[in-house]
Each structure stands twice: as structure tokens, then as C-alpha cells.
Image (cartoon, rainbow, N blue to C red; front, top):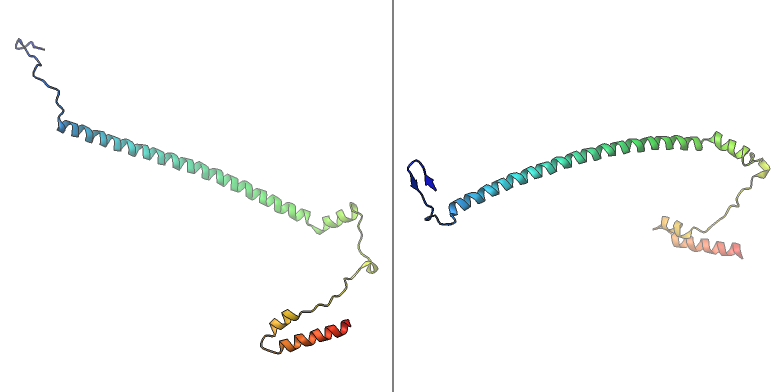
Length: 145
């Protein structure tokens, strides 16, 4: 290299490639600072995108809820229509050919008696439940024989 102002040629023969620890540490601190800033910006953009995504998802869920509430109202109205006594009576008489029962058509179920020994004895704990239970068995055997 030549210094044209002085007319003296300067040679770089004495420059050596030496790693300066001070410059290296300053470079490392700069890289770390820029990395932290980049990480913070990346995290901020991810958080914002999640907020937008959750907003859209919430909006979709509110729309779905409105649709489901409308469907529920329609189903309740349909249920009330299908279970109305007038409609059931019309279907029974017109489509199925059913008529109202006459008094002589009624068949009453037979009255059944049963032994409630265990349930009664539990209700009468502390009294003469065992004597009553044994006397009920005896009377039941006598009626069967």
C-alpha cells in the first residue's frame, strides 16, 4: 500500500493474524444479544398467532353452539308435536284401526300375595320379628296344605 501524500510505501509485513480475546468476547455478546432479541420476537409472533387462532376457534365454537341450540329447539318442538295426545289418537284410530275399550273388554290382572318375611323383619328389628316371621310361615304352610 502506498501513502500518496507522503510518497512512502507502507508494507503490511508486520501484521500477524492473532485472535484478540476482547474483540471475540464483544462479538459473542453482540451475537447473544441479537439472538435473544430474535428469540423474543419469534416468541411474540408465536403468541400473537396463537391468540388469533384461539379467537377463530372460539368464534367457530360459538357458531356451533348456536346451531346446536337451534337444533335442540327444533327437536323439542318435534317431540311435542309427536307426543301430542290428539295426534296419537288420530294415528291409532285412522292408521291402526284401534277403538276405545268397552267396559266388558277390560281384563284385570290377578292379585298376587307374596311372603314379605325378610322386608318385614328388617322393619321390625328389636321387636318380636322372629316370632312373627315363624308364625307367618306356619300360617302359609297351613293354607297351602
